[in-house]
Image (cartoon, rainbow, N blue to C red):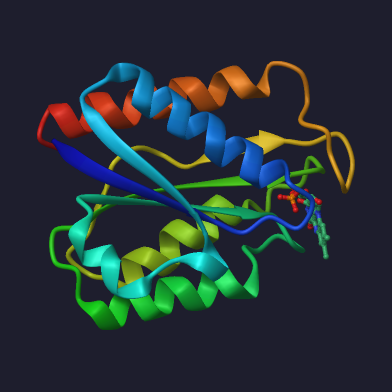
Length: 155
Ligand SMILES: Cc1cc2nc3c(=O)[nH]c(=O)nc-3n(C[C@H](O)[C@H](O)[C@H](O)COP(=O)(O)O)c2cc1C
């Protein structure tokens, strides 16, 4: 069975909620094992044991958090050839500076030889501390389902 780890940072709990709901979307499909870890708790050396890594961050000034940026850089040093990735963020405004796009670019630059499973997911929050905007949680479940479809297709 394919194994996925979801690694995230979250100051106020919104990105955590998104990560938990993506995990539910993956687990509901029944054929992929999903694990969740806050960035500060991840056992970095365990990463090579997963088929796919999902990375989530709040949007901070149009960028992922500093912690997530250096996590991506460190992953590159592991040289995880053939590893699959997908990213997600939470954001408050309507600006076009999406943290997911910065994460995808950084992954392609720092971790060559990886495969992006699906296009990054951006989830809107209504204020700095949340809550998530209405209807956003369903997008997280759908994102989790899509990850499973991609992994099953051998992508
Ligand atoms: C320092 C800081 C900078 C932020 N900058 C942006 C921004 O440029 N664009 C935006 O849409 N949201 C911005 N936000 C709002 C965050 O995206 C929002 O607080 C976050 O999604 C909440 O997620 P969390 O509960 O997981 O921390 C910022 C928040 C903080 C704390």
